[in-house]
Amino acid sequence: MNNDFNDWLEQTFPQMKLEVPLFYNFPLGLRFELGVPYRGIDDPTYFEQLQQHAVSLFEAVFAESEQVCVLTFTYQTVLSDIERIERNEVQVLSTYLRSECFSQVKLHSQQPDYDEDTAELNGYIQSQYVWCTIHDLDYAGIFKAISYTDFPERGASLSESVYFIEPKQQIIFHMYDDRGLDIVGMQKGSLQRLYEQYYDWLLPYDLEKMDQVFGT
Image (cartoon, rainbow, N blue to C red; front, side):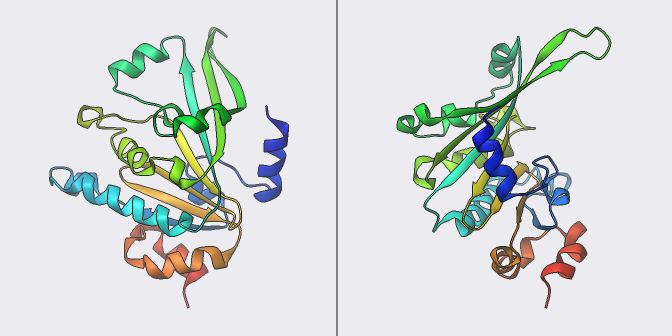
């Protein structure tokens, strides 16, 4: 494990869990609804619209940022390469990061995963990170691939968990699939403007909780 980076994460987001669902692991957060599969999956504009919303929210958070940290979690098995080809899966840092920055990618952690019954090694949960700028990332391509996670027949899909960290505002951005994304942080003021500007995009299910924190 990269102890320096882990120490920085702990200092920046003390006692917070970087796990899905991110919204429920932070005291301050916003949960946005992107798509509603059971209602709109057959609409030809379904994916295009939700991808545009993800891009708009991302740019609202990171447009003025000098740096962004991209942190990925990947489950790797012996057959991972074959499985990725069959599922049309790609990886974020090797596909959507500017090639000049790829040498700066570092390993954060690698945790073994054992079969509970046989104690055999199934694979690893590997975490990598890189510091870059948003201009070094094809973030629109990343969101498109995430939206295809459950629909690989539509194009390159993504099975990795991807977290975008804005260090100055102490914000973490995580799109979990075509249905939505979470934006969490340590400072209410950093999220307040997003709550107000994109209120109509907030997930209705958790709206009461968000209103209690950010509502006037």
